[in-house]
Image (cartoon, rainbow, N blue to C red):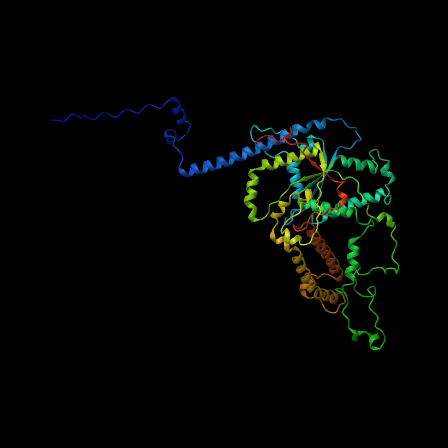
Length: 497
């Protein structure tokens, strides 16, 4: 007896829909059409969540930067609608940026100004962002001049030279050429000084403030005579004996005859250095064309354009890479700080400078009040930025001294080779033929260049080193003013982030 088949017949597959049939004939694999969606794996979920979070945070930060820029541009753009004459000068500010200690890129401070205070338009924009943002200073029709120092001390020397030139013009020592007065855009020195007062001066970072104040004091204190520092250094190096000819009395015929030896003249020597040949100085000192009364420092100095103190810290080194990464993802904080500084510069609300407190030296002061620091007022500006300096910078003077000692230790041997080859005492070697050694003239010029650089580097470092305070003169109190906010909570407050 047969057993009845109780199994149900298999259901016939559903015919594919017209859409799937159409896709099948396009060449798409059938397995792709039958694949069911599912959640990604754990590793993919981690990757997608991290990348989407980082990308979203970056997009948010850049959009906030755009928003902050546009907010401050809208506040100052009415300044550009004011009508001025065709021959009138626009308002102009001077921007000083000193070299940051330890960074070979000397113009980092001015780059910071161009990016965050002038506020240039970003090179990229996200969908929906407003790309019509103009630089704040451009929107306010404010011109600016960037001045940076390539080495420490260059900015101080530039400021001092500019002030001395102004003093010489005001005293009539350097008259203005008549051809300049004939130009339609000519302005008298008084008008030029007044135009500068309408602008301002931007000081970027604490090293810049130190160099600016040193240059300001030197310019209003030093004599007005034009000094060639290279000429003075060359005269000083002449008498140190490093390039003197070695004395050999046995070869001097006058010494053998019992007479007095005649020192060799550089003009009669077969090899001489033009840097060593100087005209004999007269016995009487040449009188300066500038009278002593003109060289006396003035008891008071005229007003200086108001100062805008802009905080700036340049993070360099491996230990500060995490801070660099954090700042790259949080550009909005720098943009807001720079935009506020640009707005203050345009509005130009000023206050008198806060001078340093007077130090009263009393008996046993170091015992009764140990470790107490006296407030320097506005001269304490951005003092915390010096804590980011590299510790190795304190060795700059000692490193330069070691380099100088090594150079002068090798100099006699190099001089001997140059003189032997120049006088034909021996034939040059094969290596000297392929790579000729420097001559005595070239060695003298090389030494001059090195000494000038070593001395300037040490003097510049002594200005900006953390242990050195910002220099102060009592004459500055009535001449300097600081650009600041008009009041707290004004309409210029940055939009909420």
